[in-house]
Length: 143
Image 1 (cartoon, helix red, strand yellow):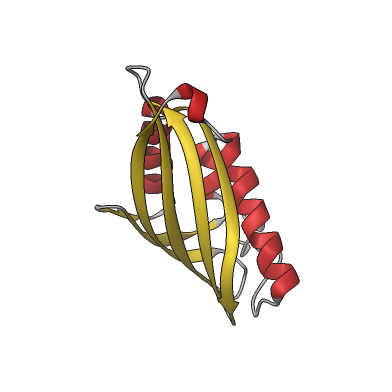
Image 2: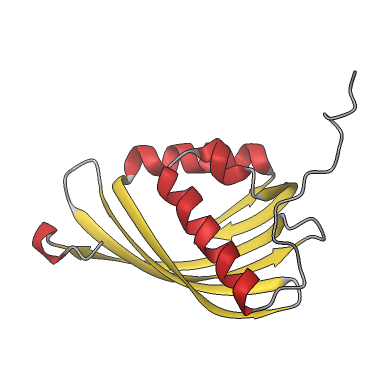
């Protein structure tokens, strides 16, 4: 009756990463985040995932979902582009930029980098993000 509920979930590809599988992980993350679905995004992370996102410290999938729900209720028309920066064993480094409009109608572009660490099942157990925002005009949008 409970067989599948407690089965360990795998998120392919799994570490150790090579260039092809690291790029695949990055593209999968970009696609998930652009869905703007907190549940879809959170399923790439371990149940007890640890995040540092700017000045926020987030622990566990449920907190990730709440964080993302709040994020996308304030960051409208969100569009993200990620790029592989480096990889080794079970770790991947990513550069990214995204654009969004706040609830007052001001557009922003955010630049940053993330360091990811994965468990043996390909789920991200740690995510450390450093992000900077700049105001832009709508005519300056790239994404």
